[in-house]
Image (cartoon, rainbow, N blue to C red; front, side, top):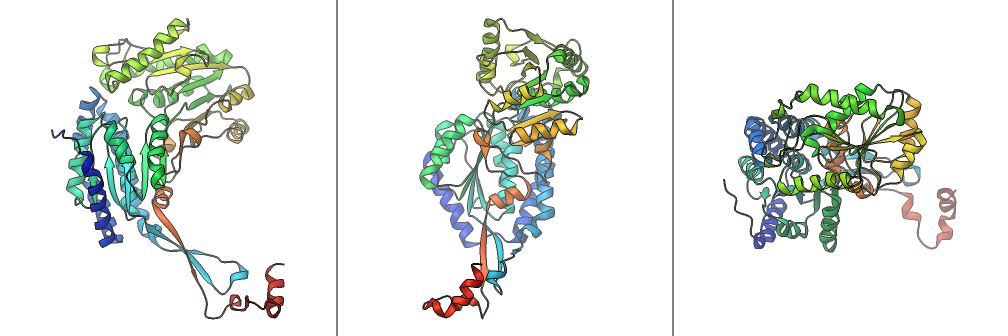
Length: 469
C-alpha cells in the first residue's frame, strides 16, 4: 500500500493544473455523463474490496454496513445524477414581470471551476464520492482530501479515481492535519467539508481570505423525541438502528432520546431486547458490530463513561462487554444525565446513548430549543398534530419522522445543517446548484420602454407613472 503523503508544496501546483485543464475544456454533457457512468461501474465492481479496506482501517467494520452505507448510498446518488443531468443542465426560463416586457430571462447553471472536497473517516467512501460526483455532474474538476484516519481507504479512493479520471480532472491529496489546513486555504471555486463543528470553524477561517464559498456538513447533538402515543418497542427498534449502525459513528445518529417519564424504563428494556436479538445474548454475533475507528476515539468515549460514573449516573450495558484491545465498545445507555455531564456537552459519535425523561411535550421541545440546532431530528408519533407542533417549534438540518437516518439516503432530498450543524446543502439538485453558478441572463428586446427612461424625464412621465403604480 502506498502511504506516501502529498507534499505541501504540491498542493498549489496541482490546483493550478486542475484549473488550467478546466479552462481549456469545460466538461460538456457527454463528458460528465461518461465520467459518472465509469465512476459508477468501477465502484460497483470494487464494492467488496471497498468493504474489506474500510474494515481494515476500523480494525473491524461490518462488511454489510459498508456495502449499504458507503456503497449503496454512493451508487444511488450517481444513478440520480445520471437520470436528471441533462434536464438540470438546461437553461431555466424565468419570468420578468410585466414592467420589463417584452424582455425575456433565464438562469443558466454554469460550472464553477475546481471544487475541493474534504471527506471524513466515518463513511470515508460515501462522504467523498457523493460530493465529488455532484461536482463532476455540475461540470467541475475536483481536488479530494480523504481523512488521514482511514489511510487504506484513502489509497483505495486514489486508485479508484485514477481508473476513471485523468490527473488533470480529479486529484487526491493525502496527509494529516497540517496538510488539511493548507488544503482548506487553497483558492478553490467551492469547498465541501464534512466533519466536526470544531474543525468546521477552522476550515471556514482558512477559506475566508479567499472568500471561498463553502458547504459545511457538521454535526451536533441530534435528538430523538418519542411521544407518549408511539409504540415503545417500535421506537426502540428504529432508534437502535440509527444509533448503533456503524457503532454510532454517524453524524446524524440519534445523540440522545427524550421519552415520557413513565415510559423510560420500558424503553430501555425494549432497547435491551432489541440488542440481544441482533447480537445474541452473549454478543456472539459481534461480526455485525463495528469497532471504534482508533485508540483516540475509544479513549474519548471511555472518558464520557468515566465522567458519568463519577456523577453516579445509572449506566446500562444493553449487551456484551468492552474489549479495549479490539476497540470494541458495546451499546450502552446512560439514564437522565444533566447538561453538566460530558456526554451531554459534546457530540457523542459512538455507541453511548443518553435517555432523558420528560413530563410534557412542551418541556421536551423547550429542551431541544435550549441547545444548538441539530443536524437531524427524529420525532416519533402517530398524532399528526404532535408532529406538526414539533416541526413548527424546532429547527434542524433534516428530519425523519418515525424513523432515523433515512432522510440522508433519499436522493431527492437536500442534505445540510443549520447554525452550528452546518451551512449549505448538497445531494440531488441542491448539490448540483450549490456547485454551479446560477447565471442570470436577461435578453432585451429590439424595442423596449426602457429606451424612454432617460432625461428629460418629463417626456416619459406617463411611463414612469405606469411602472411605479
